[in-house]
Image (cartoon, rainbow, N blue to C red):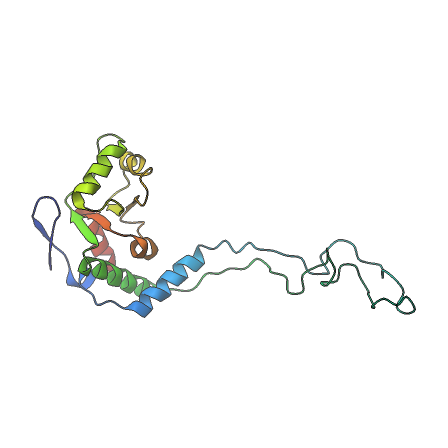
Length: 201
């Protein structure tokens, strides 16, 4: 399929398999949820009544005081006691095999292209880390809030774009379905598109 480049009016040939795939919403949802779950630290930890310090002695005798029976001041119903169902560190990772991941990426890229949210450009680089230059180029493309996908990490471009709200820079090898789905617009260089085409083909 031929895709028109923004800026110079030329077009580039891209594989239908990578940029013309049907949108598979359940697959995209599953992969996005798995990706977000994998980003969770899972370090939440609470103490059970056995782990809270103290409470080894019965606070008062069993009968005759008029108060409710109590065996420990670290009971879950006491202030300062342990938790009844204490949270423990755990792993939130969900398995997503390579075929599913590639299918979701193809689906997302194709849908972005159909919705005119994926803008291809010949190159996107700056000579110096100037935010004004990046803002002007994005304004010319009609994408003031966008995810910029380049073929290789560009330090100057990253420095120039980091102060712009809603703008992020990522290289083609690090792009993920969550950032693509959440982006208002995606500005991608033709070289980055070819790298993704090779990865997803």
